[in-house]
Length: 187
Image 1: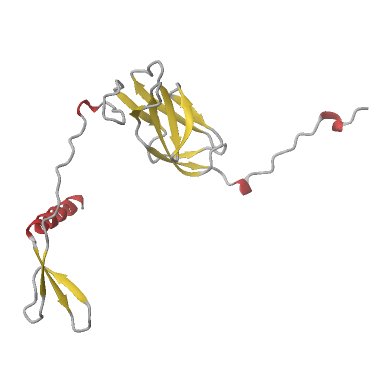
Image 2: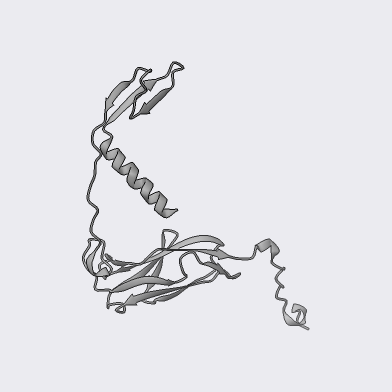
């Protein structure tokens, strides 16, 4: 299936590069059609289409090491989220999610990790293991960045989407209330 799609895309792209002529046909009922081959029995207006804009793809960064926002090497060989896995479904009725980060070499003095949950910074620090507590059920996206002492981003992790599954609050049994020993009265 993927090969068929690739062949179709290449064929369309090569055809689009060659097809510089387009014809506009107005049918008797008023509908407008565009074609690259005009029918012989219907009058058609020729439209000259300019060549498509193209550009060369950017080369991937060399070395495979994380880069800062300005493209400079960060000195970190690896920075990624190792837990939870992308697409993972986590079942935790308390809403706790453990996040583990892999950072090599270890965090440099003055650098801090900032964790983002659903696009919002939730803080961080120097730890590469973080527990998110009492989270709402549903789909969430996390990513992390390393910031230097000046607050500049010097490395970015991968982005991970996971789903937290919690038991519904209406299905939870009632929690017992705390009652003081002895009924709460002094004798």
